[in-house]
Length: 227
Length: 212
Image (cartoon, rainbow over all chains, first blue to last red; front, side, top):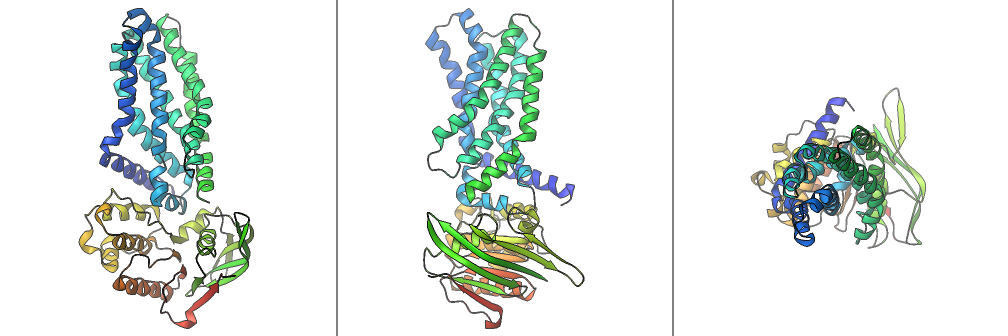
């Protein structure tokens, strides 16, 4: 299989998934709406005390982003599993891991990217320092793709089950926690004026590890779910 | 010249032996008709042969033979085999929110491909006037025809068809029989299950009965 045809099929699958998401625009906004609702409800629940909100802002935004990402995981493979096109994605001459990567990238563009775009607005709303808003977006840029990639392994394992919801959260949460810790820690450090290079490198290494290591278990888990 | 060799295949499902010691030799130009009652393991056998499911025992080998060389590969987990095989299962595998043409364009980018154009295959399956329609607007029989159009685009040597006549009308059934014959004449192989009686030349057809 030549390299050209591999990148062609990667782009074709990416295009197909984005087109399908576009035709389901209403569903597209669900994770985003959840994210915005959680973040905006927090000040109402805790009282609009500026200092309190400021210190909690990185945590609130990241926890909301993490839960929104987890809620949206099911859509990666569910519809393909139900209409039989998942079998066709496995039964062809192309390596499944590359196709998986295309699907996860599409999923991140649909669910992760909008969160990243709306996050600065919500950060301002919570009174986060303007200096660290750029850093918040950077941690989301490095962190949310990791959530999608790790989530894909778990969803591939549970897609064949009728009620995989609870199992899914048990599977992914232990892997999500380090991302959450390093991302929020970076923002808190920056707020008190300390260097954050270490945290950013660690997040970047999570991302590289996830990109290189998760497509194979995802492909294997999909085969297992279908057999 | 291609062939599919199946040796001592057995399948167990929920502690029940569905079938055991199945041996098949299928060569270019031949059709394997798998017969059996409901629940006798026809679909399981087909899913094993296309490589989705692992057999309990036995092996399935895909053999490519030319004048001077012969290569054989075990079917399971081999992407090169999956590229030369096209599977039509119970589910059509169409995306309901894409148009007929968009579905086929994506199928073609996945497959090895051949010289057939999308317009050609739509005419052959009788969907030429529906190319811009979303699949969710098609009837069950039309969706089945679209799934068959995907086979024609695939350029695969081996077709594995699970109940291809489901939801098709008489014209549709005749169309599928015509296309299967064409595939066999081009030196392709076909494996299918069907509850309908099929009309093919007897010398091309191998029958396998799974009922205990």
